Length: 109
Image (cartoon, rainbow, N blue to C red; front, side, top):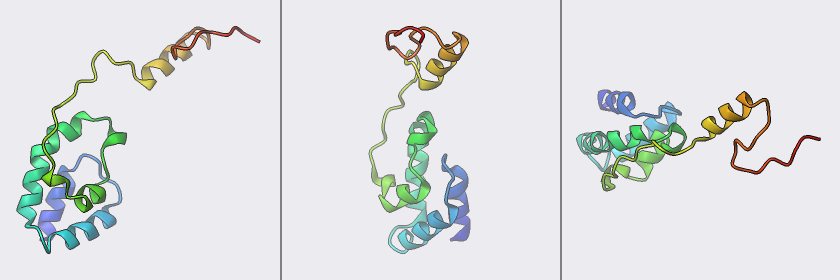
């Protein structure tokens, strides 16, 4: 059973709060077979890993919400979308001028 959790932990793309995730795992695996949870995670890994890391739930949240039962979501490509990092890079490279954030420049004061 501990090996099952370690496998889950190694696969899960956002590994934070391991102790909390272990507690959630121990509680849930009393009701749900570890193989079922792991199979659900494997199905969802392509979608989870395609997301921005800040939008991937913590492992404990994923377990507590029985997310392995969710329908597999389509993978969304980030191409063509401007990210905050892109805007910040443009803003800094323009010597703090311009409209890198999509807001009209109000001039220098």
